Length: 125
Image 1 (spheres, one colour):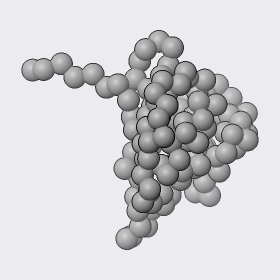
Image 2 (cartoon, rainbow, N blue to C red):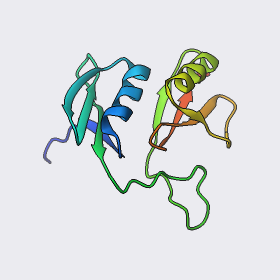
Image 3 (cartoon, rainbow, N blue to C red):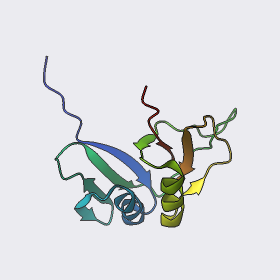
């Protein structure tokens, strides 16, 4: 079997630099590539990062999706040490708290391009 290695998760957006800046603020990762149509963020340890690709026809998913609505294809889970403080920080950076919240120890937020992502705090289990 050939060896596979995940290097990045790619998010489509009309504004790759703007969305990269948002996630850079949340994660503190270094900027890698910085082109008008393609921007990357990489963690210092060299593990898989995030990339942002221009999609002029980007349709943000609906959360939660109903029948005949654009569903999210994936989302990011970001573990935090203080859920309340992390939500406030993400909102200050440009996120919006989603109306529907499925769990008490998780907060679903929407990034500036409309992608849902989750902040969660470990309950030790």
